[in-house]
Image 1 (tube, rainbow, N blue to C red):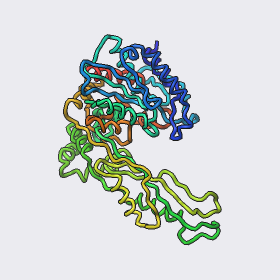
Image 2 (cartoon, rainbow, N blue to C red):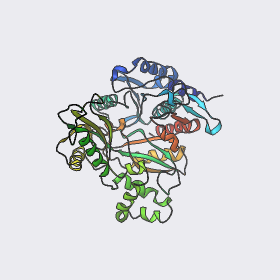
Image 3 (cartoon, rainbow, N blue to C red):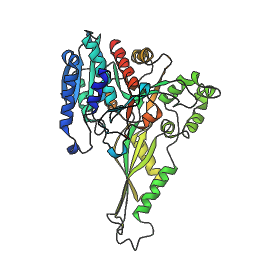
Image 4 (cartoon, rainbow, N blue to C red):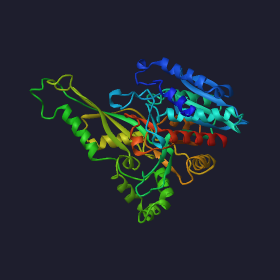
Length: 443
């Protein structure tokens, strides 16, 4: 017989809370159905915690503890990204169980990102609330409704907490997971806890010309100037370096690395530039933790195949390494392109998040919960989160903001995020409930 917690999880995965950048396309009735299902499935949570609906569809729960100061905030988001159903081997919203024993996995959009965390949090709180437990300090559950697009729900939650004078002692959102072999040469499982995340910006490159018929093109049409600009950006990437969170990560895992790598990681004051240069060659993830990255993602030109483009445009997605800034990156893009006839406009951008400490009470609470529930052989290490999350808004009200998803994920499982066949193994998800329960119990 399937665990009742698993059946609750599957029911919530079947509700297609898909977000879209164009919110007129969102089926808000699915978000309402999701909230109604939470009330029905988690009675102890809704009896013990106060619920406030923020920004129309985001949920903020408050569990009053013996002391309201320095509360714990557990974050997750309700929305999921759209699917291309034909690419999936199962119905993406059927939450089918595939495999047997320890290989049994739930296949569904949101299984990891991010209903896996959201439902695991609720399961942990339901168990504790039903047992009569009262936390030592307040606990908040903050569930945004549009993390995958605008993040307005999380910003509104932060504004509500700030207005109430709440200064969280620990904020935990989705982020790094328990992984094997991500850091070359390190074979012990590592819990990658994000202490910061990269900034994000979009630079729009625009080249213009008079237009006309494609049968009589000029020597350097707008499309060629744009292509040349993109090629220059690709051939001259941002320089490599070890940001403080990455340096701390490598120092933490150094004792578990074989020689001569161990010696290199223990001498980063000297070997740092070499290590950064080598890591940039070891695949997209390693490259992204040692430099600001820039890639052209959207291209637009003429409206017809026989028409010269009067305007050729490219959107360049830039992810900023800790220490870099939106203004500095924009200036470098202009310098590398070196063509005054190609305009560079920053459409939107946010600098990298502040860095949370990897020492102190908040950090120890996370590390202790990892050791207690996910394995005492797991090494908890600081990590620079490569993508953006709703947690970045919480740095305005807390200096202890972390990003960690308490699931032991394979490379293939991580690659399925935002792709087809997203899935999570059932035993891995159930262990994650224990992590959240331990973290709340220690709060």
